[in-house]
Amino acid sequence: MADTIENRLAELGVSLPAAAAPAANYVPFMRSGSLILTAGQLPLKDGKLAVSGLLGRDVDVAAGKEAAKLCAINILAQAKAALGDLEKIERIVKITVFVASSPDFTEQHLVANGASDFLVAVLGERGKHARSAVGTASLPLNAAVEIEAIIETA
Image (cartoon, rainbow, N blue to C red; front, side, top):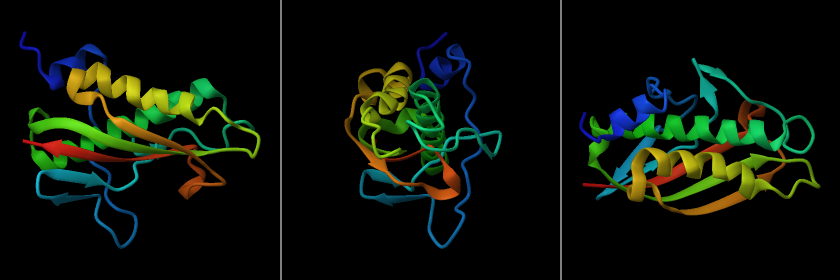
C-alpha cells in the first residue's frame, strides 16, 4: 500500500467528513497564491458540535485535545475541498488554536497538542507547523475549541 495521506488517515481510523459550509457571510477557505487560509473550524463530528463548554470548568484537557483533533480533521476536509487531493499539501504553515477557557485555565498549549500531534501523524514532516494557542472567554455555539490554518500548496 502506498504511503499517502489518505492511507495514513485510514490507518488512524479517520474518514474525512464533507467540508462544513459557512454559517454566515464568509467563505470556508480562501486561496491566495500558493496558500490556503481556512476559516475557523469547530470540533464537529457527524455534523454536530462534539465538545462544548469552557476548559478548566466544563471540559478537561483530554476532551479538549480530542476537540482540537476534530478541528484538525475538519481543516483537512476544507483542504481537500479546496485542492481535490490532499497530496497537494506542501506543508501546514501555521495553526491558531482558540481555546474557550475559564479565567484560571493555563493549559491551552496542551489542548493545542491534540491538533498538532494529529497533523504530524497524518502529514509527517509536512504537518510540522508554527502555532499559537490562545485562551478566550467563549467561542461560537459554545464550542470548546476553534482552529484556523494556513496551508502551503503545490
